[in-house]
Image 1 (cartoon, one colour):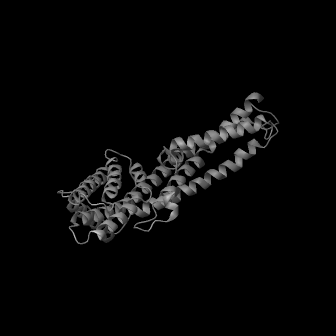
Image 2 (image 1 turned 120 degrees about the vertical axis):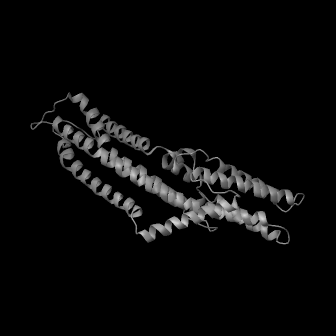
Image 3 (image 1 turned 180 degrees about the vertical axis):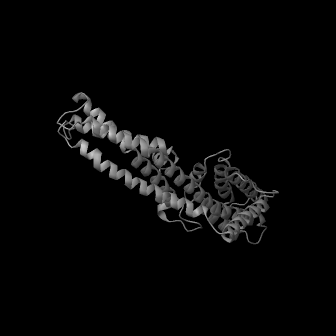
Length: 305
């Protein structure tokens, strides 16, 4: 995945991406009028299209908004027993990571949590490499690969966007480092491998944290999508109403005919904005799901691309 596609699919602001999609709709529509492919003359069906088709489409988006809200709320609600189990599981996970990183407690902030793991990974692998200095069985290559991965985890420090944190964890890197760790540990099973035991457990913690943070990020995205779709509802209906009033009951219009292509093209772009917003969020959620499927050393080929 190149930088542009990653920005469009994941990292870019969903509102900005949706505006760009709406702008493309405007340019395509206006371009079609310039070459005579479509027309918005007084006798055209623009008024009925906006009056009936767009309004029914808006009600469909309302249904989608309600469905999205149900998805979000289903994760928020729960019984006392269920919520307690989730809390206990999270606290136990944080305690285990704190022990592995030799800290009194692990950070609450997801970015700092991952940065702490990355720092400890680098320290443990460096200690193991120093202990086995002079060997030529791939330790230096392993040390270099793990250092690069640790720097990647440490680089998220200070990041306040959960989705941006998840974005840095995409792909099979953690699984590849885990497999390399197991291979190095088997090759040195007759020597001290305490550091590698800790490295393997920390990499497993990254796998769990990735899935957990992904869940949080997706819930936040769905909540943001629902809120924005609801906020766009009334403005879009107003644009639809005002566009239909441009066309009077007789074959005539209230604006100059040379301006009709621009006015109607802009109206179409604005009306399509909720759909573009929905599409931008769905693209991100689907991409995140595609590249974070694995929770262990088995990595589907699709997740490597």
